[in-house]
Image (tube, rainbow, N blue to C red; front, side):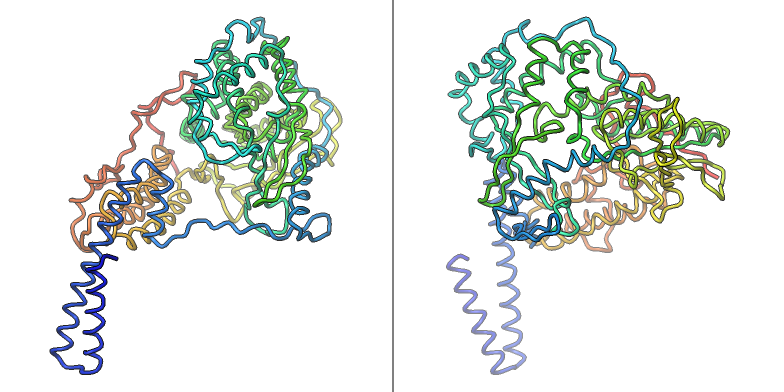
Length: 601
């Protein structure tokens, strides 16, 4: 507080004391007038202070949000240190023992999952050989390429095993580029990666549930930042090769430039609504894989890389990249011992998304079901006018998908893999879809057949597909209901800060806590009935009134334009699809393609 405000505060307290001792009308009026002026001055001073602070930290996102949290009285997510772990029937409280037990769990969990996968006698199909070879020697690495690869990485301040952050590396890259050039050049020439670049620092993040159980912690791997630059150089080259040779499946949407979650969402719903309009029944299967990245088999991955054209020294490089990797768990200042990673691809690495795309690139060729893959999220669907024929086809074709997962050591979660029936007809008994691990041409062992849960019969009749709740009626009732719940926090923040922050800062809160939920996949779910949209519109109006300091009962029109927000109905909210890049593949949506509304009974 300024000296003037401190003097005014003392004066206010004096008037308050006088009024309490002599509660006359004159003393009351004098105190209240002074108090009101003082409060207005305090609010104006706070507003000016935070406005200057936000302006000063305009380019510092972290500091900006610290200021906004202070204003809105939201402390953020406070992480409590892990003080106790229950593993193998024993409680551990010693910090070093806790890190060791967590590291053992993270290392051994993938192997246990793979061991639980029912054996499938059908071997993986042979991947077609690509005659064109991928080569590091065709274009030798340059210092410019290393500088460009480093520029593509985010300047994160999280420290690796050596206490070095990418923020530090990027700041001094001009000094570091020569030794990095020598390391990367020799690595690509010999097919060998220094063991010092294969150490991962794992930070366990609590997911929810019982904090004593190791399974409720997500391992976040921080690889050495110098290895990330090496990986980025290789990733850029391999990506260009795969793109030029057209080796990746068009049904894969994750981790690919020009692809977004919106494309598979629109393809998926268009496929189902078109079937509804043709009076056909549809079955959609939502696959859930358990620790897919951690259970990937190295031999299968290397064989696919070889078939795609990665041979010789290049294949040796990838084999060396996957082997001999180690990790340790870090909690506060306590580190566990190093353990060697047995299975999977290195979490947190630059190459992992691309390697997993290669690993699952032929999934769509195993089955005639309409398949879409986004990272480890897989959905399959099929339609037919006859329900019995549809069920028979889906069970047979999905058995082929199950065989793919089984032969590739990917584990389907039996409780989370579900199917949904989409139809204009009403059914008293829903069909049975199975997860069948038996060989296609062999005897059918009933112990290898598991009944899949039907979403239509569950207490929550919807499936979460890439962040959007899909219901059997395709009217997005549950998606809009979930959006309505999310603005409550945003409105709370805005009300707390409306007299302290300026309009620009209030807009930042609106866009980051409300608008982001509003616009995600709006091209898809905004075709829902108008009655589902009204609660969302009302919440948005409330937010805009707060930002524009309008009266709660005032007209809505003046403040919408100042937000430049996406508009609904009278708020002029229309989804902006012009910025989306169309996928040039068969059946892919274009930006102007209209979403088909189902003809529901």
